[in-house]
Length: 184
Image (cartoon, rainbow, N blue to C red; front, side, top):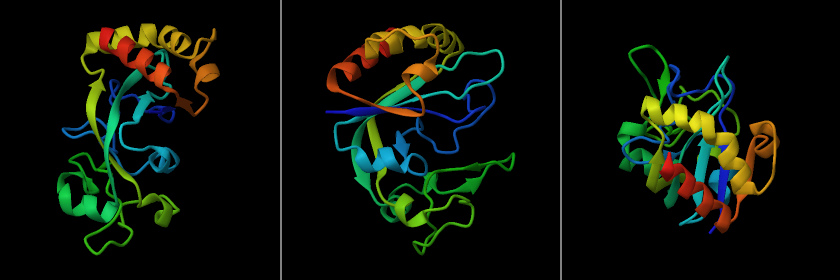
């Protein structure tokens, strides 16, 4: 078993008005549009975690994680999970993580490149841990640096020193991270 932890981009903080366009922690945990390198590397039973992006005056926090339960193509995901198809919400924001249309072609709402590479390895998860309540989010903000130091056995002053953009986890690190997240 292995895992990965990655950081969302600057401003991507789900508890400060930003909405996951890739519904990682939806009713069914899934990752289908971003991080194709991680999606391609994980196998069934592996873990994926994410850290919020930087925002003014708030520390990033570990948002949550899930265990890989299934890997399918975006074409198959489009058939099985229509609720995760790309669409615009009531505010005009693009949401969803299935980057193909009903014909299996590149969906017009997806503006990323490398479509051929990105349409494979749609990941579905189980055993989701999602830091969601305002109190839990604040505890996670306060403890994330400490949790990552404990997970990696390394002292640091900044989260970036421990997780530059993404980082691989071994089984012991996953157990530590899952245990610490459950305490939050």
